[in-house]
Image (tube, rainbow, N blue to C red):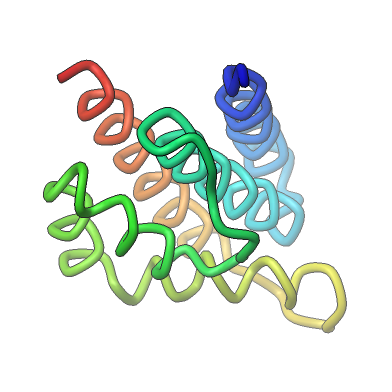
Length: 125
């Protein structure tokens, strides 16, 4: 099965997150960041093992990807709080009256870009 659509969708979510952040729509920017990170990690699993778990947990996805890419475990350890915020963004930005601050979303975006880079690097090796 072809999984390039996962990467394409992840790229689009990330691009949309950047646009929303610059527009001051931080909650939806955070949601798009979460979607992008989730899809980059699922893309890696799909490329490596042909499937991916039906979960929204970024930490679980990173853990599963770490068997192919130990650098992701380092990213998790160094950014555990921001990754936790990214996970929370999935539910909270959709269903709860939470407001993300610009700085929080910028941090999330930075980690998302780092995860994208590590995933793509590990898939090249």
